Length: 90
Image (cartoon, rainbow, N blue to C red):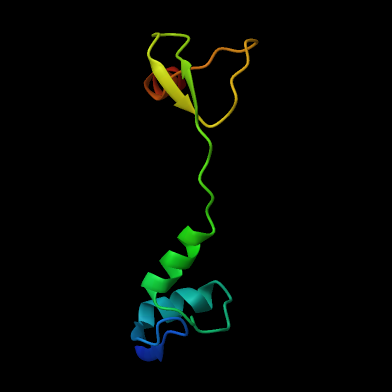
């Protein structure tokens, strides 16, 4: 039903293959347009939209090790390092 197609990336002008499997996936999701960028350019474009998060350094309330967290800690709630937090979730 679907056959591989060779398309040209609109960013780098390189040829890339729009595989039959990808076409079937696009169709199952209701996408009507073919991709305009190759995987490398799509990934690069996705990554450029991400802003780096400010990380805050604090002390883990359980083990006392240094913990880096993506929010400003307050004194009203305990803060855990990633290992202690993962252990608590289990």
